Every structure is written in C-alpha cells, then in structure tokens.
Image (cartoon, rainbow, N blue to C red):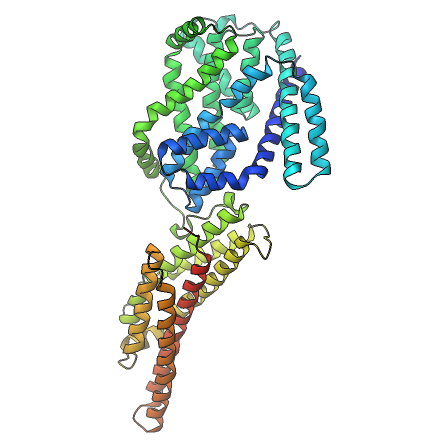
Length: 522
C-alpha cells in the first residue's frame, strides 16, 4: 500500500520534472524575452508570472529565471515581485489538471502511449523534437502517477482514520496544516503534495475541511524549498526568495484563521453552482487562496520592496551585483550581466580620474575594489557555456572581454602614483591633461545615460588629439633638452607624463568602443 503511494508520488514528480525541463529547453529563450519586455506594469508582471508557471508547471523554474533577470539587471526587484506573485497563482494549474482530467478520465490507456512515443522521440530526435519527447513522456508519467496514487489512496483510506481532525476547531486545523507542511517538505513540491490531497479527497480518505487545511499547510511548506535554495546565493536571490516566503506565510495565516467561514462559503458555492465533485471545489479554493493573497499584497508592493531591501541589504561588491551563477548558463542573460558589471566598474574608476590627474591628493582611489570586481567577472566568464563563434552572443562576449582587458590596463596605470604626481604638477602637461579630462567627462555621461549617441566618436577624436599632443610634445621636450632650455631629468619626467596620459586616453577609448559594440539594442 505504502509502496504504491510512494511510487505514485515519485512518478508524478518525475513527470513534472520532465515537463519542466522539456519546456524550458523548447521555450526558454522566448520566456526570457517575454519576461524582459512585459513586466513594466505590476498587473502584466503578475499575469506573466502566472501564465509562464502554468506552462512550465513549476513555480521554481519561473522564480529561478526571475532571480536571474534581477541579478543581470534586466528586471528591477519591484518588477520581480509581480512575477513571483503571479507564479504562485500559476502553480494552481496543477490542481485543475488533476481535478478535471486526472481524476475524471481513465487515462492509463492514453498515458502509456504518451510515454512510449515520447521516449522514442527523445532517443531518435535532436533539439526541439527531443525536448517535445521529454514533455510527452512527462505528461504520460504524470498521469500514470495520478492513477497509481488513486489506487494507493483507496487502500490507505481503509487504514488511516483522520476523524480526530474532522472538526472545525483551530487546533484540528492546525495539526492538518502541519501535516501539509511536512508533506511538501518531504516531496519537495507543493504541486505534488496538493495533487496527493486532491486524490485523497476523491478517494474519501479525507473530507473537504481537512483538505483545505492541508492545502494551506502545503502552500506554506513550499517556502521551505525556496528558503533552502537561496542559502549561499546572491542578495537578489535572497530578496526574491524572501518575498515568496513572506507572501505564502502571511496569506496562509490569514486564510487558516478563516477556514470555518471559507468552508461554509465553499459548501454554498457547491450548491449554487451545482458542483458535485469536491475535488473541483478544492481546486477553486486553492486558486482563490492565491488570488486572495495577491489582492491583499497589491497595495503594499512598494512597501514590501522597501522593507525587503532594508532587511536584506547589498553586502557584496556593489560593482558586481549583477553577476549571478544562476544566469551564467544562459548566454544572452550572462552577456547582459557582464556588460552591466563592466559599465559599473568603468564608472567607478572614471569618477576618480580627475582627482588623480588634477590634484596631488593621494589615497582617494580605491583600486582594490575595482580589481576584485574584475576577478569576479573573470570567474563568471568561466561558467558561461561555449557559444558559436558567429553568434551575436559570442560577438558581445568578445567585445566585453576586450573591454575588461583595457580596464585592467587603466587600473595598472593609475597605480603608478609617481606618474600621476608628475602630471598634476607639470604646467607643460596642462593641454593633454585637459583633453583627457574632457574625454573622461564625455565617457561618464555616455556610460551613465547612454543618450549621447555620438559620444564614442567624439572620444575617438579626443584620443587622436591626445596622441598628437604626446607626439608633438615629446619632440618639443627633446628639442628643449638638446638646446639646454630644459633639464634632462625634468624633460624625462614630462615625457613619462605624456606617455601616461596618452595610454590612459587610448585604453579608455578602447573600452568605450567595445562597450558600444556590446551594449544591448534598445
């Protein structure tokens, strides 16, 4: 009996896993594109989260993708909250599949052919067709799991007596909710736990009131998985997981306290709508709980976002806040995260340039932070899968790698403090110093706003002017030394300053050029 129940849950979970993996491969890039474009408004974000989760049959898959987008800077944390709320609603689709199809139709005759055809597609095909085979096999196993669970639950109902929890007292409901939490923690899937509850209700093992308490516990139990998943992850992942946990716990507590009232309402709904199957009523209840939670949270999304950001502040290197291992496997998103990180580091370094060039102040530039950020980017690069050389993502990747190399050269030059002192003190270097300052000013404006389209071309021209200043200036210094108008030591210092300024200008121009080639198209 127990073997049948456990096997049924296992088949159900395996089917869901195959469906999720197959759909992520088939529609993964499309899902990312849609997520990135349609989450500007809270209602579209909620709708999108619900639809995507209903398609891939996994709120976890939607949550992980959303975390990746937040980490890469493609979604704001506030936009992500809408997607997370929607994903909680979308996960109730499993309840409807089980209640309307899985328990009403004798599906074993359809399920086995689905598994057979699906496995053949997976073995004999490639790419999308192989993924479609995974999806077909997944649905077949899911239905076989439901069929197996039904058999097990009928036997289990003869040996388990839940009459002690059949009343409407808060204590009885509390223990059932705890059982629901434990069920979800054990199977690591709220969808599988709810499906088990639906099948138990259909078999008469439990009544509607008991099933409602179990579902509330299962909705809370799913937060344990999210909490465990975010251990050791990025701040963005922790904040997103916290919203998921907070939403389910608060909603669960409120609905739990209202179970007696909700039971009466559900029974009246059954009479009014002439619904005979209690599993349909439970599916309605499951969806209604999530909708109720969304309605409660909607007016307070901004408050929730602010509270979460204060509760879980950014502790790591802020220059690499967009880098997250969860997005490294998706080249398009990984390129976005890398690009934004290089921009952040470049802005950080450029903001300190004038202090080094135009004053004698020391110790104002924290290069160590920028160097550590570059190390983090290189570690992130190692996790990105190999891309076709002629692909757009590879070309962006190559441009970003070039920009990081030039950025490292700038940091090394800025560490030559004695040359910075020469530049600051020399009247002969006033003009090239001014040219570089203008180049920095325009570069910062472009990096921070992206609105000055001609900025890369202007910077290129300024770099040429700086090169000419270095070339002409060097010849003049050497002539002055030869004519005795300038001490050799002073002349050599001036030449070093000219070379230093020219090198800084050159590497800055290369960074802007490569970032311009790698920036996303608006």
